[in-house]
Amino acid sequence: MDKSYAIIDLEGYITEIRKSAADSIAADNEENLDEYITLDQMKGLVEQWSLGKDDEDRLILNEDANQNIFEDTRIWISNVGLAKLAAEDLVECAWDNDSNEMVFWVKETTEKKNESKPKNKRTKRKDSGS
Image (cartoon, rainbow, N blue to C red; front, side, top):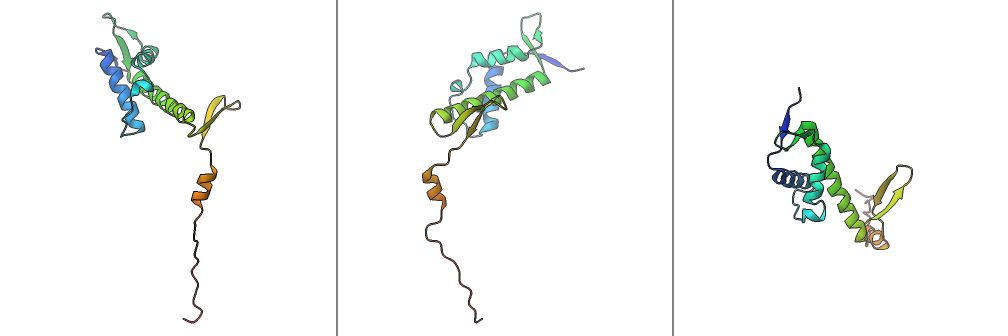
């Protein structure tokens, strides 16, 4: 039987799982996580995946629910990060009707094309004598 757990400290739980999800994306994460997913949004995810409440009105989770919350949080943070990059014009984005989702790509600029070409390309000559 799958074990279930009541969340005794909901704010502590959502703060820790949010930080853990962000750290799994970038270990040196120094961002204000409220700019990516707020504690209220995290609470909504926990409520969405909870198995219900116990007799003390605490949310109940099992391991699957906990994993789903973690994965949804990672996806949420990644998506907001991509949206921020697009807003800063660092990546391009568009809606893909075929896949029914937003797609992102790095736009190759003229400057990048020129930077990638070697400037003084030299070739080695083979000596025919030795």
